[in-house]
Image 1 (cartoon, rainbow, N blue to C red):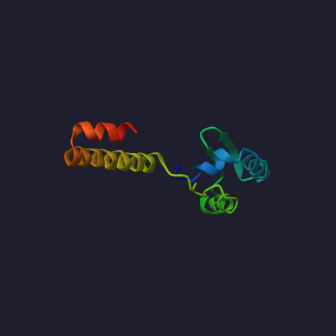
Image 2: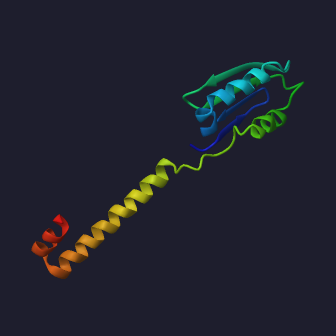
Image 3: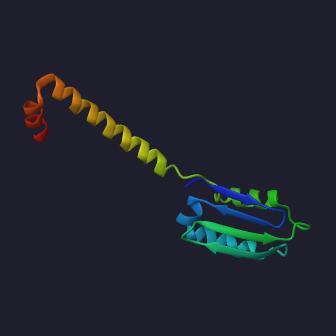
Length: 119
C-alpha cells in the first residue's frame, strides 16, 4: 500500500502500511495525541491502516500535525512490492515462458518439445 494523506482545515487522515503493521506504536502515539487540547477526535481503523484526526485549526495547523506523524514513521512507505508490480513481474515471466515454448516447438517440433517440457 502506498501512503495516503488527505488534509482539510480541521481534519487529517493518514493511511499507510506502518499504521497497519505497528498497532502498538500507533496506539501509544494516539494516547499522546489525545492529551493535546487542540485535538478533538481520533478514529483508528487498524485493519485498514488508517487514522483520522480532527483538530482545532486555530490552535494547531495541519502541517505541524503531519510533521509529528511523520517523525513517528506513520508516513513511511513499505518496501514490499505492490499488486501491480507483482502482476507485471508474473506476467513478464509467463510471457517469456510462452515465447520460449513457441521457439522450442518451431526449432525441434511439437513431439520433441512435449517430451522436453514434461521433464
